[in-house]
Length: 326
Ligand code: ADP
Ligand code: TRP
Image (cartoon, rainbow, N blue to C red):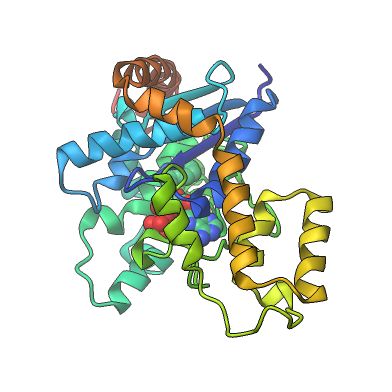
C-alpha cells in the first residue's frame, strides 16, 4: 500500500441510486481499486442520524449501502469498508473541533442555509454536520476525498478546521485534504430533469426490481417532439442519463441517433433500459446474494471497523495529548 490516503463516506439514508453512483461511488470504487491509496470507505451512519429516527431502518440501510458498494465492484482487499460508528473516536474529535469553530461560521454552510430557508427545524446534529465530516476526513489524515459537487464546501470546511487546530495548538497534526470531483458528472439529472435525489423522488435505484426500473425509465420526462424530429442531445434528459453508461464511442453513436432524427423517445427509453439492465448483470445477483446473507456483510464491516479504529486510536492519542486531555 502507498502512503497516499483516500477517505470517502456515503450516508445510508435510503437505497443508493444512479445519482449517488455516478456522482460519488464510481470514483470511490475506481480510486480505491487502483491500489494507489490506502482507502477508507465508510457508511456514514452517525451522519444519517441527523435525519433517520428508526433503528431498524438505519441498520438495514447501512447493510444495503455496504452491499451496493461491494456489488458495484469495491475490492474489499484494497479498501477498508466500515461503519462510521465503528470508530466512535470521530465523535470525540468532533467535540474537540467544536471548540474551534464559531456558530456564524457554521451558519454559512449550504446545508444549514437550505434547511433554514425551507423553514425546517435544524437539529444540532445537522448544524454540526460539517464538523463531524471534517473529523471523518482528518482522523485518517486524508490526501484526497472523492465527492459529488455538492460536498465541495464541506471539504473547504475540513481544510479550515485542520488549519484552526494546527494554529491553536501550534502543531502540524492535520494536513489539508483535496476534494476530487470528476468533470462532466458533477450533477446527475433525475427522471424529471432536476438533480437526481431521493428527496425529489426522481431517482432510479441501482438495484430496484426490473418492473420498477422499467416504470422509472419509461416515465423520464421529455418534450413532445415526434419520432422524425431531430433532437438536441444536450437538452435531452434521456440522453443525459444514458451517456453516463457509455464510453466515448457509444456516446458518439447515441448523440448521432438523437441528432439525425427518426429516433423516438420510446426507442430512446427502451435502449436506455436495456443499457441499465446490462449494467446490472452480475451486480444485481451479487447484491441480492449479500442482502440475503447479512452476516457476510456484517463480518466485512466489523473487520474494516477494527482496522479503521486502530488508525483512529493513533490520531487520538496525539490529539488528546496536544489538547491536554491526557
Ligand atoms: P439524495 O439527494 O438522494 O438524498 P445524498 O445527498 O444522500 O442523496 O447523496 C449522497 C452523495 O451522492 C452526495 O453527497 C453526492 O456526492 C452524490 N450525489 C447524490 N445525488 C447526486 C446527483 N444527482 N448528482 C451528483 N452526485 C450526486
Ligand atoms: N456528507 C457526505 C454526503 O452526504 C457523506 C460523508 C460523511 C462523507 N463523511 C464524509 C464524504 C467524509 C466524504 C468524506 O455524501
